[in-house]
Every structure is written in C-alpha cells, then in structure tokens.
Image 1 (cartoon, rainbow, N blue to C red):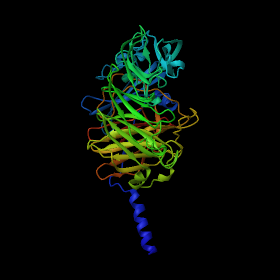
Image 2: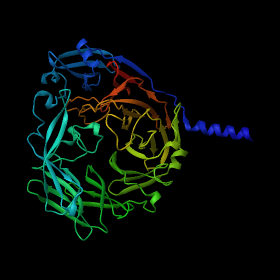
Image 3: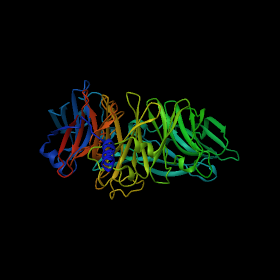
Image 4: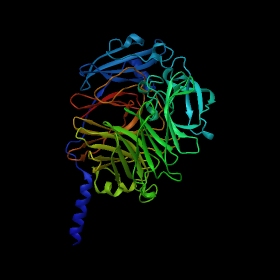
Length: 543
C-alpha cells in the first residue's frame, strides 16, 4: 500500500512539471565594432538606437550612437540578415542625412538641433491635482525641459511654474488631453506605462493650456453625482458637460482610454471597495453604459483596489487579485470582460490555479511562495484563448501565466521562476534595488513566448525609443536612444498541448531595448544583447 501511494504521489508530482518536446535554442552572432566604437562600448557609452527591418523583412538595420572627442556624435549602422549574419556597416558623424537611406525612419528632432517636437514647442501645459479640498480642482502649470544622458537627449521633464484653482467644484479623477490637442501619447509614450518606456517622467496626463481635455469625476455636491465631458482649458468653460445622478458617491479607482472613448472604474462603497461599477463614456463624456460588477459578497472574495484595465482583442478587461485565505496569502484573480456590456465575470481561485499548474522542468518555483499579486498583462491568442500574467510582488518574484478559454475559464496555469534578486516592491530605492519589468507575453506563428526581465540595481534608467507596435510589423516614426538593459529569461508555451519549455537564460548578457526583440517571417526571435563587463554587443537568434 505504501509503495502504491508513493508511486501515485510521484506521478502527481511529475504531472506538475512540464516536459516540452521543443526547447528553445539560440545562435549567437557578434556585432563588429570599430576601435573607437569598441572603446565607447567598454566605457558603457555606446548607445543602442534600435533595430529596424527593411521593407521586405530580409535585412535588419541596427543603429548605435556614441560621442567621439574629435568628431562629436558618431553614427554606426550594422546591417544583418534574418539569421544574424553581418552584411555591411556604416560609421560616420551623425546628422539628419544619416537616416535618409532607410525608408520610413526619421530622426528624433532633438538629435537634429531642433528645439523640441512641434507639439511641445513653446507651449504651456497643465495637469490636475486629483486630491483637492472642497472639490475645487487645482491645475499645476508649467513647461517641458529637456533631459540629457551623457550629452544625448533622453526625453523631457516638467517644470512647474504656477498653480491655479478652477471655480467649478468637482474632483477630476479622469483628465487627459483630447487626441491631437496635447502631448502625442503614442509617439512620446506619456501615460499609463512602465516608467522605463516613455520620454516623459511620471504617470501624469499633461494637457496644453490652449487645448481641450476630457474630464470626469465626482461632483462636490450634496447629492451623489458624476460629472463628465469636454473642458476648454483656455476659456475655462465646458464644451460639453454631462451630470449623472448615482445611488451613492463614486470614488475613482482607475480608467483607460478606449476605441469608443473612456472606461472608468469607480467604487460606490464608502468604507471599502465592495461595490464596483464600470462607466463607459464616449469622447464627449456622454454616458454609454453603467455596468455593475459582481463579487462584492464578502471581504475575502472582493477584488482589491489594485485593479488594472487592459485591452485584449477588441475588448477591455478589468483584472484584480483577491485573497480568500487572508490578505497577502495565496492570491486569486477576478476578471471581467467588458464590451458594450459585461461579457463575463470570473473568479479564478488559487486552488484552481494549483490544480492546473505546470512548472517548467528544472524550475525551483513553488506555488506556496505566492503572496501579493501584481497583474501585468493579458493577450489574446489566435485560437481565441487569453494569456493573463501576474507576478509576485514580494520575493521570490515568480510569474504566473494563466491560459483562459474565450469564455474566461481557466485551462492551464504556468509558474516561472524568478530572476535571482529581482525586486517587484511598489516602493524601491533607485540604484539600490533591481527593478522588475512587466512580463511580455506574445505569440509568433502559433507559439507563445513569455519574456521575464529585471533591471540590475547598478544600471541607470537609460534613454529610450518610440515604437508604435511590437513584433514583426514595425511602424517606426522616430529614432531615439534605447538603453533599457535587463537580465532576462524566456519560455516557450504550446497553447494546444498546454506545455511550457524550460527557461532559456541569457547567461552573462543583458537584453537591450524597451522591446528587446524582433520576429523574423519564419518565426525566429532576434535579440540584441550586451556584455555588461566588456561592453561587447551581440545578436541572439532564438528558435
């Protein structure tokens, strides 16, 4: 009897650990550098300008810049094929004409002696201070100043010059410049992204004082009312104002800009966030739908206020952890799919995750180590399934990936091991602690990849690139430095067999770039890497 029990136990344990038939393999190719470029690389002063496909995706242009004492800013371009083999290289003093030979690529204005991009030049901007007394919004006013990193332009910082108080009485929880009126959020990546991925500091939504803003929030009135609409920042008047009566005072939690307008999440509970509601609004602030969200039946099944609104496919998802076994223990996930109305609401309990768990072969990750969940992203696959990832906020910073059916039911869970020493705490000392970057979950030719990254403590924030989308289709408009360097590991998941590979680690190399990979038409991944000790640059082709 004991032998049978032991055999059954061993079979159960074996079922948890994944045996993937097609592990990740890689080819490594050196990127040749001139003596001067190599000296700059050894000093950590050879900067990555990104990698860009030619029109038929047969050649890859790899850009680097460095500053030479004699010749000033130097431009190095190395052309490789889709297998990483070097075809040619160019090295010359950098000027605007350096990029004219590359189609659909333009120089960042700050690298061509222009003062600032047109949508920021000479303009005053403001942002609302959300916490205000008596409901009178305060508007902080100022201008953008340039930030430099080793004499290369790195983005902007906002210098506050003044503060004014509006006469209207409301709390502007939602406020952002209408498209075309403010900071170009797409090219300059200003809002609701990891702080490493944008040209502007902070999570602030900046609004030009001669433009118009979308505003929504709680009215400062004796009755529970919600105000929304379009506000003219110049005249301080409403172009469109909508006041909606509610059952109780709505407290703003988070919001997201959407193809149809805005999705705002509010709580109508005064003592806790037990009564969640999603408010769909069009671009003029008109209320399209008020959507009640379930799961308010008790404190242990209630989604926490750490709620994310994310897009996947043509839908929005409201995702939050909850803790049925007590706060910060064994996180579970609540997920709501919203379109014109609530499509589904699901609770995925920790016990469900554990029952359907796959752990990569050789991993030391343990489900019992999960404590505080930080939701990172959701991706829709070509077969209609969804991949939802969350990371442990406290050590060890393991990442959980949930494979959900189109109806939101859990099909499989995957647990990946942390990068040693990673730190995902919400408050960290920059320069003293590593910084966990949100996982990247993406699909290439039917195979799903999960990229986990951590920025070492000793690395500076770096300077970054503008990109309009990920993967094989690249619509580039500007080139900027992109020096996000991180330790990394990557996993391969087969969504059909629901198996995960063992980890491919990048050993002593750091992956480089805000989005550190490109995909080839054949489905290979091309990563640019750097040896942090020697400064050597390489390409890794994963398949």
